[in-house]
Length: 370
Image 1 (tube, rainbow, N blue to C red):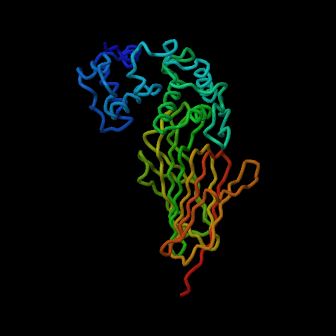
Image 2 (image 1 turned 180 degrees about the vertical axis):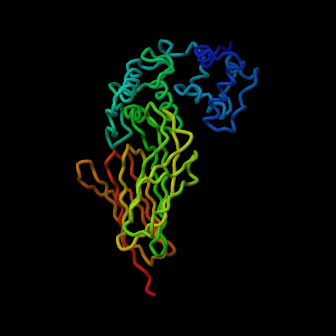
Image 3 (image 1 turned 90 degrees about the horizontal axis):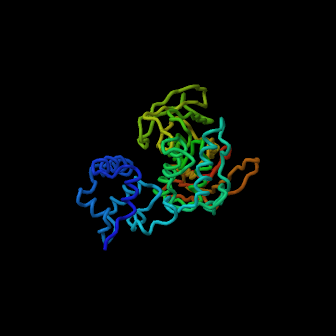
């Protein structure tokens, strides 16, 4: 005989058990997964079969994706288990000490005038439970926590981090690592792509996937750009990679350097990920062929890609990473370089960079004889 499933209990706890309320919450979650899924909620009869435990297999994948966005602390498979198999004390079976540690990390970051932690605890992620007193036990039902209300900033950000971890297939230890960085802006991805023509003139395009782990909306990001040789003021414009409207506010210009702000709308809300991109033109690579990238906040993944056109041969390339104590280490193992049809192609990738570190790529090229 079929038995009601865990999903039915979850809807009851959130007071979403009426069909109209369920559809409204389904659409809100669907919009965060894929806007085209809005309105794809199950029929009333189909939802009844779901909750009654009459399914022989899981619903279609898009339904599972939306349900996991509605309840990020549960997998779809877990939601369709019989209620009688629900583990633990009604909190999803998680270790309450672990949940308290996770929320405590976030609350500490949000409650301090300056973030207590601004760096990954190690450059050897993933690992077991670094940053927490106990290794995390998932699923984590944060809506049931006694340590905070469901609507407070810490619980909201915790839910967002868990949902992000699910979508990015992050290891559990890295979810805990992100929670420990609460109070910061995190560059989940920082990409820098440089195109250099045969005369050395370049276009530099940045793309940032920014995770807001602060308790305030972020509307502005200050940047600067420097070149040894320019042809007047550097040109700066938003790129199409941004997921929101971006405008450039120039703050200070000199012959070789410009300081500016990317202002964007809508703001990146607490717990939200926003994509910001821009391109600068008018800088020249003349004699010294190198790019040094500083980091101003924690960076999960950094990629630097360079295409140098009109060269006869790539003679060599090296890459170093500067540590916080001023020492330098070779990271040539993460460097790929080649020449192809008269272009030199180079890519360096690094993970888990801390604020104040830098990655430098240097290369030498041979020119064709006129």
